[in-house]
Length: 500
Ligand code: B12
Ligand code: SF4
Image 1 (cartoon, rainbow, N blue to C red):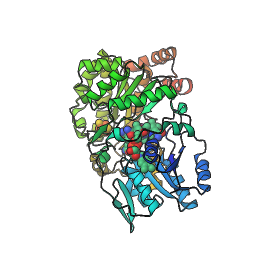
Image 2 (tube, helix red, strand yellow):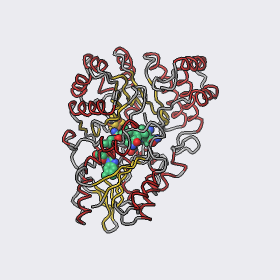
Image 3 (cartoon, helix red, strand yellow):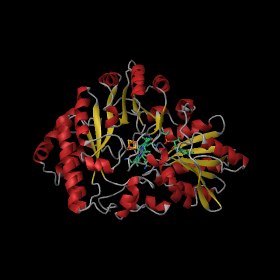
Image 4 (tube, rainbow, N blue to C red):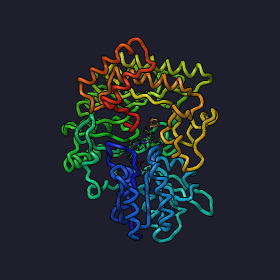
């Protein structure tokens, strides 16, 4: 085996984060196979870099991580060019898009293998098989072609996370200085992106995690997380942490143990959790988390409507009443709840769709009254590209369909999920999307987000004053003056564009 080129296609225009997906894949082959990393987030012209590497003739694998959205804009054309120009190079895709859309990826004809789900065991095994030219049928977590048939092999149990090799941070630092990945956020000057668990024990109908992990979750121990964070703090100056887990707070015991270990390190941290899980935490646990630096937690509140919550099949026990109560509880412990809502869910009639949007707006206003510090993120309902999820069949029957060809995923229609110009969800009319977007503008104007580090407190006060009358009198239409200030003066940060 020659060398492996690991590629992280561009996902972020600014604030590049430690590329944990390719780094963990690199860890799985470290010491066994030689590898290099090209990070699309930090390269002006990543194709040139890739072409230069491949032109040396010293490589025989191109391995990419691919999540839905902008990463496809490099993953698709680059894979195609590599196949055309360097036909001997094997192309391997992994990550959430590749795992959930295996059929369309394999039918493209230019991807040789997909490692679906965790790649820690399959990737090195696949490379060994390719090296020896031996069969791959017996490998788990693999999608491949045999006699023109697409075969999906069996799924492994989740691996013991503490037994996985440590991430090769020092080696990454040789390709790209790690400091570049630890930019300033509202949490601190040098924020670490860390991933401490895989999967999620729940099975929400709309979620892309579910078909892969099937309601399983496994985490690193508190000691392992602490060891890694301390390493990044001492060697690269990290002072704060974004936990990138789908659900960091599954185990109260682990959260408390980690809090006890980290509390003297002066680190501020953030993670994603569930309201009904953390609502079961004791007051003592919440107090120690805050003391240990837990400043904000992201929650999928989704809606205040219990019937829709039920339809979303979120599992657990979340209700509208609980969402409200919990906002008050978080206030008591000075932890900012970051609630995300999904507006514009399908309903039987146009009137019902609109009524639900207005009900959710009223609900969100109520949350802000209970705890004004609550951060609100609003998404327009857009089906998550997950074949096989519970909601997939329901939206399909409403006339929605996913692209049938891999290239179509980067067509202008799909590129930005541009619902306003090109409604992909037939039940959502442009005036409904206007209502959602205009309310969001007025809300964000009246309550500027704490996570925008570019916004001075003077500017926050100015924009809040500008939006006050509209918010008070619920006049949301045509909020051009707020938009103008946000766009040209404050360059307002829209949290949903870059995921966090
Ligand atoms: C960090 C992150 C981002 C970063 C980008 C990171 C980067 N690469 O530069 C940012 C914030 C930009 C981002 C954006 C988006 N993201 Co994102 N993101 C994540 C997050 C939180 C962590 C990814 C990560 O580092 N995981 C850690 C690694 C170790 O795990 P892993 O990726 O699963 O990798 C393992 C396996 O998948 C596999 N594997 C992965 N890649 C490869 C490659 C090869 C070759 C092999 C062999 C194996 C392999 O092996 C790895 C080790 O076991 C995940 C959620 C999550 N917890 O994973 C969401 C997630 C991947 N994102 C998601 C989405 C939808 C998006 C967006 C498209 C939409 C949005 N609003 O969030 C946007 C796109 C917008 C944009 N501008 O790009 C979804 C995908 C869901 C789906 N249906 O497929 C996820 C799962 C979040 C979620 N819960 O919904 N994201
Ligand atoms: S709780 Fe979050 S990560 Fe878990 S299945 Fe539901 S949406 Fe997905």
